[in-house]
Amino acid sequence: MEASDSKDPPYFSRDDQAETWILYQLADSALPTGGFVVSSGLECLEQVGLLSSLPQFLQSSVDTYARSNLPFVAAAYDANSREALYHLDDIYDAYQVNGVGRRASMAQGLALLNLYCKSYASPDPRASPTPPPQVQQGEGEDTFGDTGRLRAFRDSIRDTRSPGHHAIAFGVTARFWGIRRERVLHAFLFLHARSLLSAAVRLNIVGPYAAQRELDKLRHIVNSLLIECSHLPIDQALTSAPLLDLAQGAHDRLFTRLFNS
Image 1 (cartoon, rainbow, N blue to C red):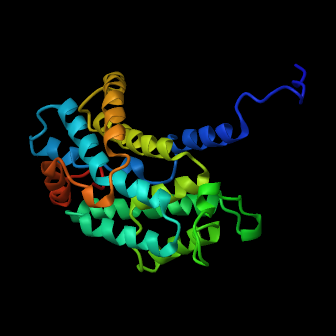
Image 2 (cartoon, helix red, strand yellow; image 1 turned 180 degrees about the horizontal axis):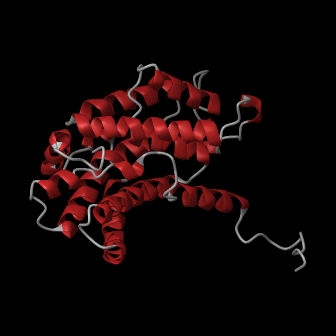
């Protein structure tokens, strides 16, 4: 079959094509960020007999995840300086109420930054992709506007100078990928919901077909949470399901464990 005429219009605009492709990659189960080794307290609740309703757990988990994380993801996306990003990371770290969740968040954050630095950013800063315009809007010499600064953030995590939490890493990395803010927040919640259902399937709580049905039901809940939480300041971040934090914090005490959290 002959190749199409180069003058034909592209299926997507250049920006939409790049953004959509990256979102597909973020949704790939093979993405090496550790998202499929966490159950967010589901494994503990199931083992100790406190899981009375999977749909209720899913709704509660997505709700508390949105309210406690979206303000930080959005703030990290908007951060224009290294100091602002590190400050956000420290504040988020202070919000963590259990060590298991904190550990999982830090592991996923570093893994995501490693993914960007190893797979997307050129070793030569002069050859690195130009960040989207909103990355370059800050003022002063410390403007967070090139991939070298993102590497510096990754290195500060390795040196234990910054915690490197997942919400912070996701926000700033997605901005460097050029993904629009509203789609970043939507993807963040979708990936959490998907990982919950993946854990439920592997724990034999629900079958794969029923899991997809439950994931589809969460679509409207996620949309409502985005409307409610996407513009919240970080001082209004909160946990709406403390029992889930307690369950996650007890995860290390389980006799047998399939997941890290």
